[in-house]
Length: 314
Image (tube, rainbow, N blue to C red; front, side, top):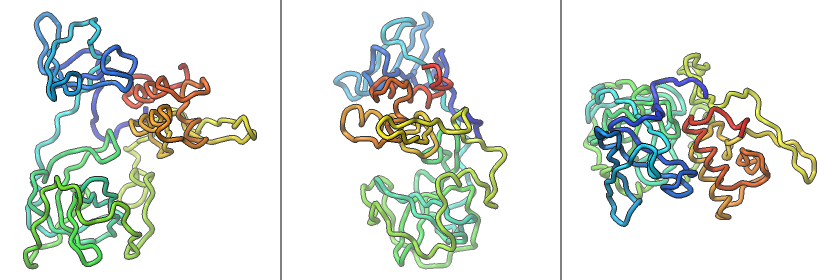
């Protein structure tokens, strides 16, 4: 696995109180997609008290697992303790963005982020999430303090979240009171799920690979987000026409990262819910048996969780 920019989660063989217990798809407990629970306590005899949901008819369930028993977890994930809530800004503060093409995470379900040009002004709004330390969406090792803000887009106020690392104070806000925003739980924010291209940006939107660039647009030497030990993608020859396909094993969606999203796409293909293209099929067949099935899904999950170092010896 590649280096980690900031402290991330640890995967352990032994339980710790407060850790996330997980069962992979090969375990006899939890089903083919695996299962997760929380280690509530470790008892004197070595057994652990676990709370979970969906393992019984109850929405919330508590049970005991014995070491070596059928329901003993595959491993345990310890999430690092987050820093204290940031006090950098306060509701009502006016801020502005420091880089170009900064993602503005819109409020509401299934919303695509808006790209903000450098110097875009926003107003910090009252919200229970303000100043909390949480992961960057789509990443397991990048963390920011987040702030809930109002931004004017195309003449309308939109509400969502901005990362503190890319904000600076823009002076006191003397404007009139803005309309009351939603509570963060509403399903729609009034913005289409697929926003039109923002032609007001000063520069072309960055692709996902530029998340690893610093504010000057240069590669950050302290941040290695490459999760594969191979510098070049593997090649796969299409048996029909001899075409060589470039792909990265496990990276089914082609975003350069092997994570749970790739496992979901592989499972959808195995269940005939969604058909992968040739490159996706080649990337999903990590055990090279010519089929994409639950065994490949399990291997992709294990690799994403750093339980296995590679697919080479599978």
